[in-house]
Structures are given as C-alpha cells and as structure tokens.
Length: 384
Ligand SMILES: Cc1ncc(COP(=O)(O)O)c(C=O)c1O
Image (cartoon, rainbow, N blue to C red):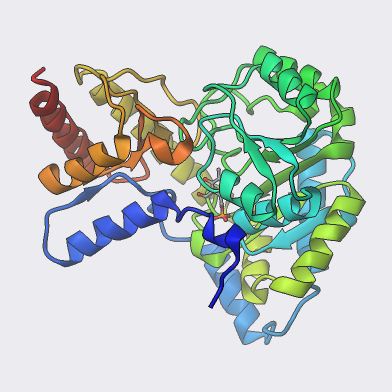
C-alpha cells in the first residue's frame, strides 16, 4: 500500500514519546523521575468536574453545533473581549478538541501548498509538523524572534507567523517593548498571525503578559488567538480549546472541523463553561501559586549546577537551560534516562539543539531529586 508522502514526512512528537518511555520504564520497576510533563499535576477542580457530571446526568450527551455550544462560545467571546479590550462575538469563536486541534485547524484553513510560515525558535514541537501537514514550509529563523526576522521572512514570501508567549519550551515572556516591536513589524507586512496563548494565565511577572493586540489592535483582523482550559484549569484530558479569529477564518476552520471531528465532547464543553465562567477561580489561583513557588525552587537549585546557563522563566511551567557543549541533545537525554533515571526533553524537539527542557509541573521532591540527578550526570559527563 502507498501512504501519503506528506504524512510520512512528519516526525512523531518527541515530547509524547519521551513521556511514554519514562512511564514504561517506571512500570517495569525502574526508579524514574520525570520532568517531562506538559500538564499540571493536579486534578481538575471539583466545581468543573461537577459541571461535567451534571451534564452527563442531564443528558447533555448528544452532538452539539460543530463549533461548540453557544453558551461556551458566548462566554469565551465575552471573557476575551474584556481581556484584550476588543469586541468579539460567538461568530469569532471555534471550540475544538484542545488548543492543539484549534491550531491545526487554523493552519489548515490559512495555508496553501508551498506557503511559507515563520516559526520563531524555540518553537512548540507540533508547529512545524502542522504546517507541513497542510503542505506549507516552515521558516525557522535563528533562536529568538526579532522584528528584522519578521520583515525578512515577509520579503521572502512568508504568509504567516506563529507566536507563543509564554513560550513552551522556554517559559519566555517578552517585555512590552519587544512585543511592541514585533507587533509593529507584523503590521508592516501582510502576514497573518496565530498567537498561541495557552499559557496566558501562568505568568509570573506583575500583571498580564504583553500581547501584540494590546499595541496593534488593528491586527485582530488577521490574528487568531488560541487558548483553552487545559493548562490553566488542569483539564488536559477533557480536550477543550478555543480560537478567536475573524469571522471568515473562523467559518472556514468550523467547516473543516465539521467534516473531520464534528463537535468536541459535549460533556467537556459544559465543564469548560464552568471554568470560563470563573467557577473554579479559587483552585486556579492555588495551582498558579504552586507553579510560581516551584519556578522559584527549580531556578534556585538549578543556579547551583555548574555548567548550565538558563534564563528565569516568567511563564508556563518549563525551564530551558543550555548545556555546556552538546550537539546531540536527543542522545544526551536518552543517556540521562538510562544512567540516572531522569527524563527531560531534548531541545532538538523545539528546534534548539544544545538545550534541554525541564518541566516544573512536578512535586518539590521530584524537582529536587531530578536536578540532583542532572547535576550528577553533568559532573560525570564533563568531569566538572
Ligand atoms: C504551546 C502549546 N500550545 C498548545 C498546546 C495544546 O494544548 P491542548 O492540550 O489544549 O491541546 C500545548 C500543550 O502542550 C502547548 O504547550
């Protein structure tokens, strides 16, 4: 049988693969510490879980409109209109099976075969594969985006750019000046933007993270904002994300979704509505405080490890140190797992060789033990 050349050209998700490998080793009895998690290590808050149970008991278990129930689209439109000082309506909103699904659909609706799409490095692991799956060509500039790169990519024919702040893998949150410059550069081009804001509520600076729409509201006509409940409300398994885009882009993603998955799970949508309406804000704030404390903990102990360089993450739950002199981080990570039983993700998965990603969505004990093991491994490897 012949398979699709496009799909055969895609790489498996390195992050999911490594987490699975760590779990398998643990099941076989090995003492494994995993700092790979891309998800909160908390249960979904009770008020949200109860809303899901209620939906089941009330029989809200049938197909819904394929872009999501009106109640949830209304709540998302209202909440983001306030957050970004814009006017969005339910016609701008598509609810999908996780933010990943929104991203894939939006890219599918915007990319034609051969289109170039700018993906600042380090990028989230799925972006290049999503672009390629739509026949597009990822353009990968040097690490960290600057306005010059945006203008250069546009001159070379790039049609769109993906932004992700706070960043997975680095937790980086650009300053207001940096975001203003990025927004100004994009405004000088015709590029569309997908702003993946999935970590927008896990920001450790004072106030909210600056956003391109704060500086250039007119970009909303060609910017899709993507977010969801997975990370903020510990709901990764419920699979609910949403996008806000112009009505045409939303309509097209909705049509594509209608012919692929139809609606996301009806029960999850009612649970997500409880989250968006603020029914679990107390629990959300508690989880936020834990992540903030763990960020402080991991930064303080990592700073004692000789040979690592890192920037203190101001968002998400990842830290992204640079290794002393490593050309093959995938090999580094598999030796680290074999020899020390510590699972972390290689920077190569994010287009950033020489770095590793450590998640601090883990207990204090695992964070301490994980950094200990990393330290021991580094000292042996580089005779530090
Ligand atoms: C940057 C980024 N975008 C999107 C997603 C996908 O989120 P969801 O679980 O809602 O599909 C993730 C999940 O790891 C992520 O890290």
